[in-house]
Image 1 (cartoon, rainbow, N blue to C red):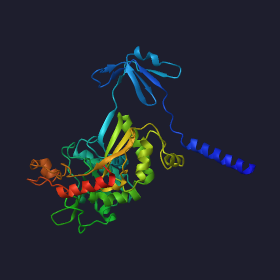
Image 2 (cartoon, rainbow, N blue to C red; image 1 turned 135 degrees about the horizontal axis):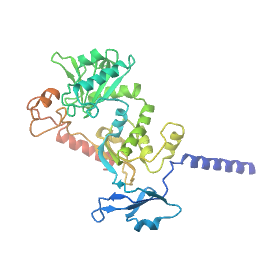
Image 3 (cartoon, rainbow, N blue to C red; image 1 turned 180 degrees about the vertical axis):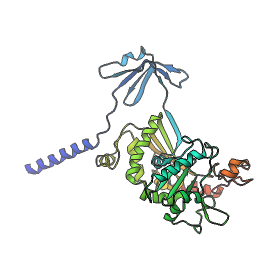
Length: 389
């Protein structure tokens, strides 16, 4: 009997120690008093302050240096900011965290780094020269708005520059894409492939051949599926997720809102929860210790809207409040983007060189709704019944 009790006690102690070890989180900052600063509060009753006291990650009080001296003790860290300015953290109410994970691993051909058509395609051609045969070349940021003289790529041009590499371009708007013949072959799409919908399609020339253009999300999905299995692997994306969160924080974001998470199952939600929630989940901690999830650190808070076709991933009847991480609603597209003429307008798009020849929007075009009103009402009713919201 004593042996059984002793063994049981050892097991309990082992479980307890293991639990404590697994629940260990990143080191939190001690209580801190920031002084000698210029603090912009956005509070009309107290627009400016000199000092700020923070405890357990929360601002407890702000005021003058003298008023906050009461918090000074041996356990409080005091930081002299020597006149530096503190502003409230930025809240990004519409971002795409999951897409940013993909984009972070791509070559940047955006107007933020290139000022002309020549610069964009010269950079692309250099990328191809340094690529291995058969390697996927994925580029982001194609933008005829920021690059005024930009000429979108034709499939003929892409095939001539990259005959041995599958190529895929993402526009800055993320509503249209371009690919070469090798990329289309890999995803088994040709001129006879049926378009997913009238608003999501594969562009063709006047002879009915693919011209390289891919419009909207349903049409690009087969390419995403290939990329996730062959190029942007799970390990790469997990590392990218941690890196992207750090970039948000460096840019001053304390809160981000993902407007339409593009995922197929709940696995990415475990990663998002692990990165942003106030406290780690036990399973997340276990996966972190074995290297399947990144190490936790202080990241921006993260709130999400699920895509309407992923409504089944919504938590059901979730009435609890989480100030750090939560799924807060559903996103549905009633129309598309002005950059490709799929935004639904009362009046036709203005005829211009940009709209007619670079964006290829027909004269007198007004766009169309992706769904009629009755279908929209039915969709919303179904979502409300499933989620209780």
